[in-house]
Image (cartoon, rainbow, N blue to C red; front, side):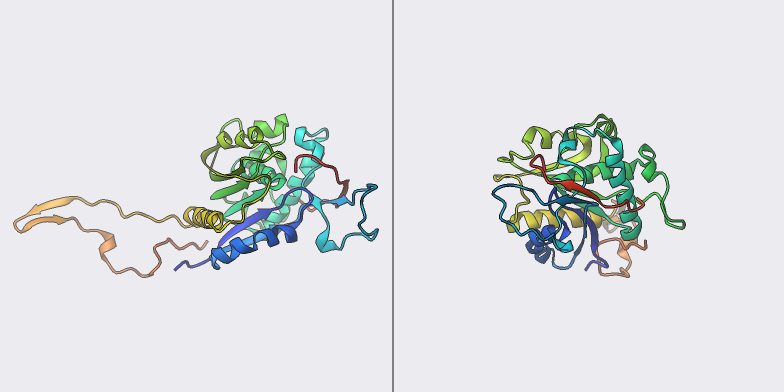
Length: 286
């Protein structure tokens, strides 16, 4: 019996939002069986409706809950022309961590997985970016505790020297990379490049394209990975054997005394929000 839920920050992909990703992960949440709390976060940038001759969608603006969003411009996947674009997102995410923390890990899809990878590096090494050198609000425990794990689905990293420099040495976070063999949006050479950026990486393939696999098999993989890294089982140490007149006996162990809890897991007590940026919706790496 776990004494709390694993808390996971969840970042959606380009042109999605938290509501869309929550719907896509609904079956996985049922399989998590109440042991995992998914904290869905909306990206700070709102995308404009595309203007196309074949677009028969109504002229009314999106309802706020349906607004497509992004963490940065699609063309910035090949490098940020203006570094302030990424900086705005990082300051925004700092505020999210202050509001929602502490969290155990992070889950991202596509551009959200790229953002999650960057966040893993900066939370583990807050001196790399001024957004993480201090909190926005006084009295907030800072820096945040490094993530215990990351799940990156169709993840990549922008082709940007500053981002790449944050991974000059691998980040020591257990990372599950879920990749599609037929993914043409985030090609395998881009997604596989993320694997050595983490010192403890595991890769799981599915036969499809650019999406989070919804088969129960993968939901169980997510659950096992999240829970095993949030609540690692502490193995009892080996104690010496002593020869006695009646045979061989084991040395005294603190594990011989009755447990105070039936749980096999240890207990735990444990950006400045920028103005909304409106961006045009363009086809590119999501």
